[in-house]
Length: 157
Image 1 (cartoon, one colour):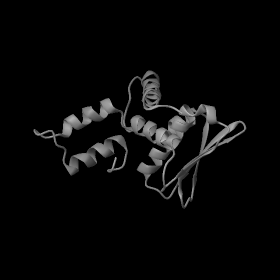
Image 2 (cartoon, rainbow, N blue to C red; image 1 turned 90 degrees about the vertical axis):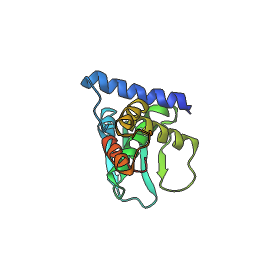
Image 3 (cartoon, rainbow, N blue to C red; image 1 turned 30 degrees about the horizontal axis):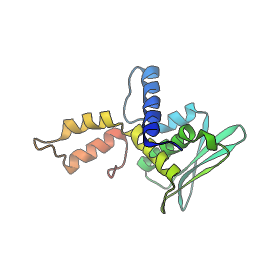
Image 4 (tube, helix red, strand yellow; image 1 turned 135 degrees about the horizontal axis):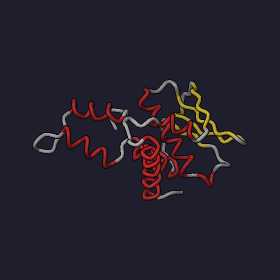
């Protein structure tokens, strides 16, 4: 298992690779493209109780995303599964089921943290928040919506 520093560093490494490949980072980050670069097969399923899952099958990796969730959640789930692929390499014999509700294991929390840092890197989040905050340092609801759209994440994020 990774610690929070390793999780942040893994997300930063992916962002650095994007910048090296494309010359700059544009938002929102496309986690589906990143999964494809890792040779993952992406599929969408009608899950009742799962956000998604990651399956290792001999020579291929399959990521299944719940098609009944909002696109912002699907993007987070894709980034989450990428986190499993990059952080939890020692567990490739295992498959990962990511439930919608219930208590999350430490490994699931790590994948969530990776997804958060990847989709909304702290430095960029701070930069964008600075653009929208008022004189008192507060950000209104409308501005929060603009920030969430910029990163392609849910309003709650």
